[in-house]
Image 1 (cartoon, rainbow, N blue to C red):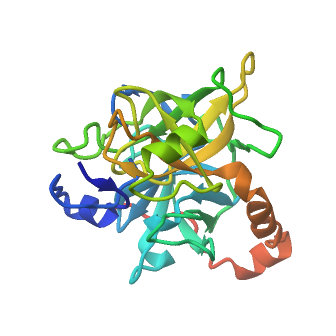
Image 2 (image 1 turned 90 degrees about the horizontal axis):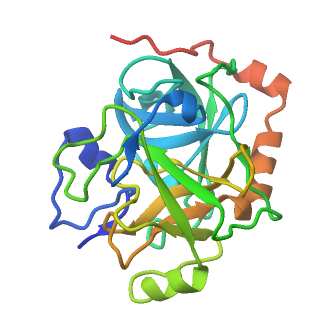
Amino acid sequence: MRLVTVIWATLIVATSSSATPQYDGRIVGGQVTDIRDFPYQASIQLNGQHICGGAIIGDYFILTAAHCFEEPWTELDYSVRLGATEHNTGGELLSLRQIIRHGAYNSQTHDNDLALLLLNAQLNYTETLQAVSLAGAGDTLTPDTRLHVSGWGYQSEGGEEGVSPVLRYADVAHVEPGVCRRAYGKVLPITQHMLCAAREGHDSCQGDSGGPLVGYAPGSARGKLYGIVSWGLGCAQKEYPGVYVNVAAFRNWIDAQVGAWGWNTLIKGWSGLQRVNEV
């Protein structure tokens, strides 16, 4: 059993050790899907290799986890693939203008584990590339809310097979905050900035960090982004639900950051490098 947190560095060198505490995002027990069913899904890449997921939330912005970005790497080292079922080919591979990590992110407690990525290109929406709506204070998770978590992460806690070459998703269910707090009582605090979800044998895993948890209210065909894959203890451990950033708790921060980038500011600061040339 291990504390699951970021393992982007481990993913890059393609090694894993179940005996070593590691960060990861935490899809196990899921099934293969197509980007047309999850057109908001993003692959965050470091030096050309998938490390984390993300969600398209606007013409220029991707929402993901803060723990996916560490020194000494900068915006020039990262790229984002959008509109692709496979993380290493297809769609659009775009460069970043700025990484905006939440100023109160705590790498020890994983609180405020949120980051916005400002792209160097305005997105053109298609069948395979769409933004997802954000959950707000009025959007309440209930036992009837259908939740999907998606990504290219490991399909087992050991991760012997590495990240999935194609996009996968799993159905999970909301776990009440009190239940989740008791589960992690001797591990780390579950704060108001977090929410939990689980289903026996189904979970996100290493390489899914920063990816979207999208919910559908009963009778609704329009999903909303409720969570961002953050942390947990192991992958699909029955006693420990997956822990996600509670998007609704950060709506003011997200809206303020997005609103700070007016059209004139975006145009003035663009480097001209938008799409990454693939080898």
